[in-house]
Length: 141
Image (tube, rainbow, N blue to C red; front, side, top):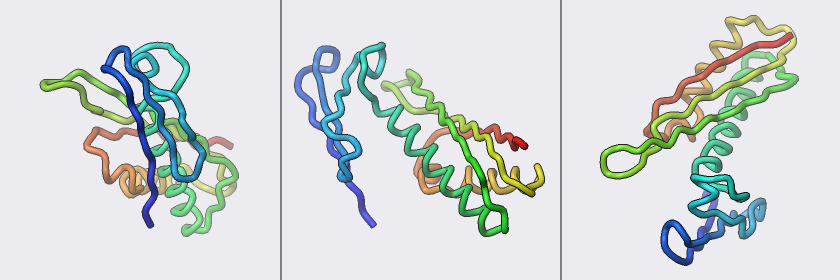
């Protein structure tokens, strides 16, 4: 399977503007630029998109791991907080913190935690990141 996304850019870093689109059309000419990345201008940015991809990938992986263990998740809510830091030579995504809350009838805290740790390490987006990945997992009743 291969999926594509495109970015177009015009201008310099601080005053230029760009758009991001995805093959599926879920994003079509979505604006991004210096102010959407480092300021409050409406639009998206690479870190936000990476966070969405990581949260989605992790949540799907967790759902699969739970289902394989005979536990059907009623609700999984995940947030990914992506950290962009200034480092020697420029900027780098240094960390992603996942926060997941779940409602899983019949699941023990231990079974949920084990599944969440497997998903944290095993989802394809986690595997591609060169960043510290941490997680808080909470099972709600």
